[in-house]
Image (cartoon, rainbow, N blue to C red; front, side, top):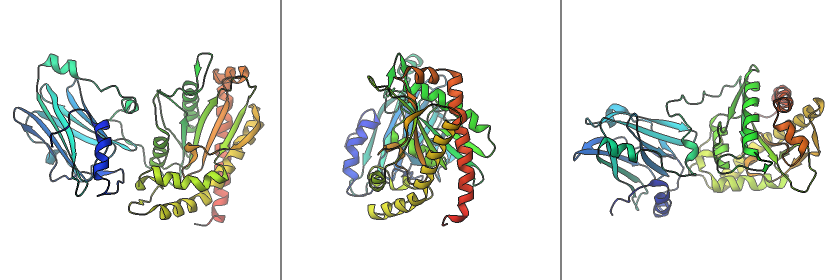
Length: 408
């Protein structure tokens, strides 16, 4: 088979089907360190990676300094080392690791201008393993600069804002409450729009202000699912929360209902009916290693995964309801306008996680003049932030008091 030319993500969709009968995907490809390497080859450079299974990938070059970048979802680098993988003079350095939860990156510093000549992944139809080969050839500095840059692809655009040299998220601690704040929408999905204002932009601003306020509370660690105008898939938001060790998940939204007079905040939790279906949807759509924090369900069938998730929800769903009630109470106490029906339930995908309490906070409606004015002013958002912070602290105290009564 001839190596498929650039680039990875679309090519891999077709290749997955070849390996599916031979291997059940877990979403985490293990690197065969004995066979993999970066080596000088025929006047150029060759990158060979042997993986336990195919994953979506892409490759591109960047200039100033010159480097080759490989992104994956996701590679387990354990056992790999720079010294063992790097050979020759055309690659000046090599580093790899987690780019963000669910994504990995390899960066190769180039000692001279080298451009990608061919790249592709072959999948062994017998055992489902994958072999990624990238060959680079010499080029002029002008040609390298002209061809450098990440390809335009909205499905990968949110990765470009991630600094591969930034440290990973600090590990969760038992004595710290990790609150994941999820600003709705972003990037190619602006959400509701009214009067030139987008839901994605307003919710990001509110999330950043909420993060700052929660970070000032001792014992609370806030984490954001996005920090810029980036598209982050719904499943990825849950993955980020799980990787951070979330104790609480708050998704922020502000709808727009043309022709209706809806106004004020409301809080959503998952419906009772949706609770029964959520485990099945998660088992169908997520890798077995990404269903419950601390548990790898690889090799288990849907029944086992669903039972374990249902057991987890016996604690997290009531805790989510208690937090939703606390939010409504603090909004009311601090005079932040509430909707006429402030407590609601809906089968929302972003609330599907079983291992931590989740709520969706609709902070208002962009179609309402009063709500829009409040959400676009620092003073108006400050009242919302104060109410959420108060709800989090009161809820945390209440959960701590309940802990001895909840089965371990």
